[in-house]
Length: 597
Image 1 (cartoon, helix red, strand yellow):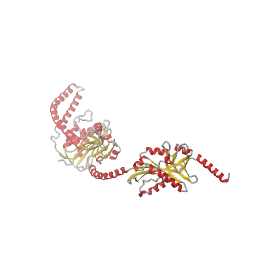
Image 2: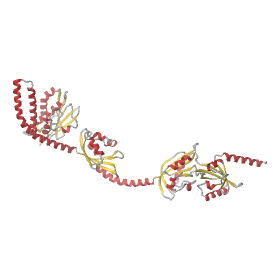
Image 3: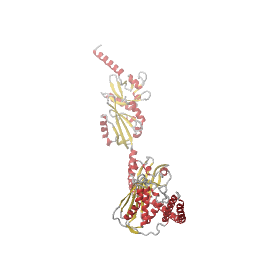
Image 4: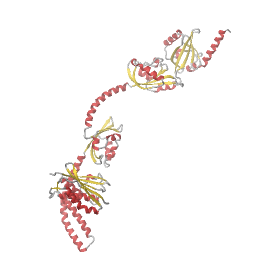
């Protein structure tokens, strides 16, 4: 055997070894496109053995037409180098594998040799799963930037099928945005991602859509970029909706300005509550003006309103808010930040979304002054009725009471019975009550207003009450403002008011304490007398009822003393105001006008 024959034998053995041991698909093909022989990998991927069945290249390359394959064969014959192409290769059972094929022509034997390498074999499984499950358009490119797969959503949105795109560059980038391709390529080659990039993309029919693009590189076990996965999302509808919304927002802003001009300046509290978000979406600034509390705290936690509503009105208030009745209304009490009680009237208008209650709007009015007038009218009605009743009672009871008292005194003197003093003391109590009834019946009888020094009147009352204060371990103190203007008043009646207030203050301190009586200016309209004790105090809900007949804090009190006092000060065109805190004490303020007409 000569040297040439030896070399041919060595080459044939080398080719045979490569044919059997290569991990790639290797096959030979004649000029008509018939596969003559395939290595084990080829047979495994295709599912057919060329020696046993006739296989054509036209059968296994599903992405190329007959004409395109013939053209590729001609190019390979004319070229001195191998031709590379990426094709979808079909298995016998219909499964597809993306392969990159190198085609070489041997003119000596007039045969073609094809070597196929499966693309991104490590990620093919999850790529296929991802493509089939996502509703967004997805494309996969090889490391050269050529399309190797797209999903159905891509074809539906953009109009190109996989057969049209396989092995080509991505056609969806408009001409004026071609620079994005280079930018994306540089980012991806560095191993970075492009996330949520807003841009414009082009469909097969030439129309443009707004899209969000996310592109991710796929690396093999060595960290080399072997594929690129791109996900696009059509946001055209959203963008158009946003533009429409912008126009609507502009219109709404004009309406909002008008609305705010009204809601920001009305005296009522306007509030809108959203049930879907379970929060207050708007409350007018009058919330702070009327209640004193921060509306920011109300925005953060609307349940805070339940802590402000009077406990007696809380259940009715909750029912009012939850009720779906239209145009319902409620009156209730609520605590101001300074502790005072306000009367509010709320009217509710539900806002329904189709069948369901979506929002509710409430308009709340401060009716405290109306309630005060109402209570005052009720009190005046009661006073009028009590006055008429008092006149009759005083007339009917006083005469027999005098006789009983006289005979009780005689009986006590004759028998020296120990119970006679008790009977007489109780009769004196009845007599004092009748005296209050008489004053109540005719408080203005023989009233003669004269100009007096209020400080002198207060000092005289204090001197008179000192012994009783000492008896109850109460230290009676004064804080007199000098050179107060003279006040026109009925001296005996004002003294009676002072005596009633001081006596009530002493009674409120069963264990003794300090009692302060002050005089001072109150603006330019009033002279003020204050009686401040350290007693048991009065509950907030009871203060509005003070001055009503037969309503008293004391166990044996009739309430007539305060009732008479209110009547006297009212006749003097003044005011009596109570401020109190339980277990800390009470301050009573008597305001007398400087000029009484």
